[in-house]
Image (cartoon, rainbow, N blue to C red; front, side, top):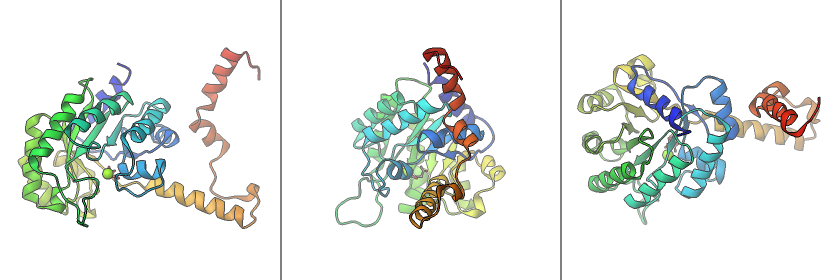
Length: 288
Ligand SMILES: O=C([O-])CC(=O)C(=O)O
Ligand SMILES: [Mg+2]
């Protein structure tokens, strides 16, 4: 299985004893840059998927087909293992099963399924959760959809900031009991909350954005956190760079004097230019 190595690499991070930050990736070039810089894993967040594909906010407008296609492009471009934020699995537990099948075929190393009620319900501005029973059904659907046993399935709950810490623990234990590979928590506010979660569960933990006081890697590793997200600054940086460049050009700046552009060496590396030239020479009989 071509994607096996990536999935095994993600599994070894989860079964190891340290905590890593993933590179936030969202397209073919960002995954190559993260890979070249030596990140051990990439995180493909739902928020950046929406921005990269649609230019929209993170409100579940993107479709499974669009998400999987973007993942497929990334899988082709690099072999960095990628953990995909599959939101609520794009529907009910049967849709979750299909989501897992598609993301597996697209080369994801792992994916998260969360128990948030998505898309947003009518007449309720605050985030809501589906029931624990429905959440368990979704985790079972995810595991049932997996064809390659090395694909990593992670149960995610935002209960800590939506209902209560106790509810987050109850849900995590229920997801753990049906056989997910790891647990993903968002909305953890302090050390005491993380420690309560770590003490009540046994699986490796993935942490969505954590406040300053709990983000030291050594401390997190001691609480069984194996992957700690750091948001999606690369996308924000790219947006700013495009903005500055277009603005300078609109204001009459000559392209030669633009600042902050990728060097030709960096561009060459990101597009794997040397490799393509070599193939061009071999396959098209091109000479230098
Ligand atoms: O997965 C992440 O990186 C956090 C998240 O939910 C998103 O960005 O959509
Ligand atoms: Mg998300």
